[in-house]
Amino acid sequence: MSEPLEESCPSKGEDEEKVKAIPEGMLAKRFIRALYVGRFQPFHLGHLEAVRYILRNADEIIIVVGSAQESHTLENPFTAGERAYMIRIALNEAGVDPAKYYIIPVIDLDVHGIWVSHVCSYVPKFDVAYSNEPLTRRLFIESGFKVESIPFFKRNVCSATEIRRRMLAGVSWEELLPKSVADFIKEIKGIERLKDLAKTDKV
Image 1: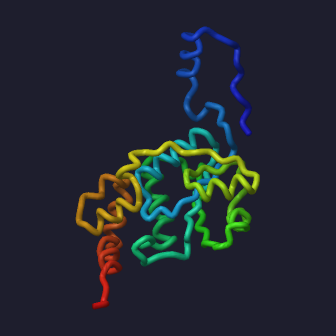
Image 2 (image 1 turned 180 degrees about the vertical axis):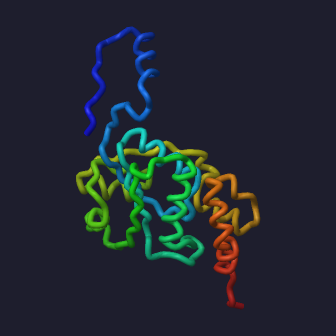
Image 3 (image 1 turned 45 degrees about the vertical axis):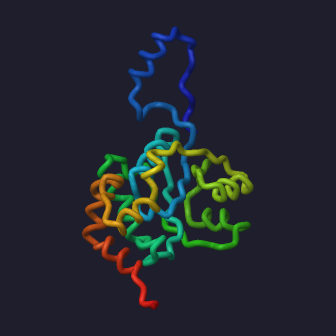
């Protein structure tokens, strides 16, 4: 872990000037490598803000694309490959250094008692997990990991569920995603896919 900055008890004004003089990338981080799990159906601005927040506290981030085996359903319309690509182009658009992150798809394991060890078998070692999801937090805590919360970003609209609802309803959704991700979803005809999945042949 990075060494903490030396404290010399300066006055408030001196302290502020010293912090301003240190480039953001040179500030000491609390963690070496952090884990962030999500389905990213799709990857939206809230997810992007979460990645930025985590990288302010950790040198590297492992982004786990959960439920990697799921696709072509109303809750999970996009494939693991499509989601990984969304994350990559969004972080590239945001200017995030590729050396700072890993994107790793992980399939589900519906046995909660061994789920954390299952995830760990797919990813590099990490020293903290970031999540707001209650079950995910509990499982990592019970497995002995440090768990941190993530500040919510426009939670009332910046949720994948709300974005998918807007896509189906024909309501504006593009502004809730990085532009590169919105463009990619249009390119792969993701809206048409969702609308087809919402159809039924039942009478």
